Image 1 (cartoon, rainbow, N blue to C red):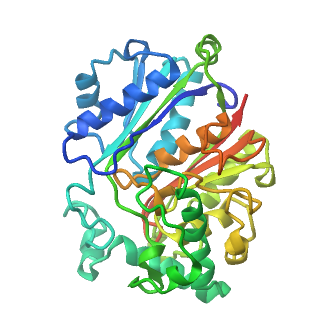
Image 2: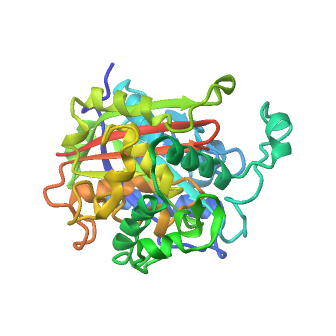
Length: 389
């Protein structure tokens, strides 16, 4: 069974807060849910499917459906880290195609900023029951040094430079200047990026994403429901998901799970990377974007540095505008799960609702892609191909 054309995104909402000291996690979930439902012209009583991941408090999905008073026929709490919400859109489309639900609500929320959590530089420990901890924790692995290993290996294999990586941050900053909610609105230069403090060689401070509170939500519906709503319609035409892990030590740090999820999504959609007008790409670090662009087929493996240089990702300047809200590098990274905001900005672009300064002309086809976990160890990727109707 294919999901091509079987479901539509009709509601999207991004929480404006970047620091939520006065709100509970459950409250943020509920507020983004209402925002997306209002955007769609629906109410919580229309919802019969609910999707969330590990950022939900308490018993996760069970706690949230109780808190929001939802009456459901279907629930999905798939957890793949930052890519969860890209994958949830695909799972919602699958559930709708199988008749499990007709109105799917997907919510994300997080408060890492107000909690003061050093998410990028604190050694990661998923608990003593996690099979990798005994082998890896003695070496104090952090998120940033895992990604730095990928960057350094890519530089070694292909001659990629820090200046080329910096162009990704520069592009994001050019977009963020037009977003009043973005945490970093100052346009930066390549020189400013490479001269910012080194965090984990070769990644500098400005190669890293922001840490924010906030959240977002999406509403995915069956075609017959979409037909009754007076809202712009975004059709889901392709999806792919895939994991990548250590493979018993036989790991290649120069590619991600997107090398598997991307081709699957493009094949289902029946389109090519060259057809894409806009790309939402998970940007926890600059190197994350570069590797994923290669894996999705926008350029050959090893050519990512050349592809992103000289403003090629800047809307109105380059041939592949990306993350026109400023992305995780400049706008927000709620709950350290950037997949949700990638889908939201892709929906804005396809609706023609992005900021006029960054709106892509004649944007009718977009990709939203995310990774979750750590690019340098175990992670999962999700890819969506979305079409304006």
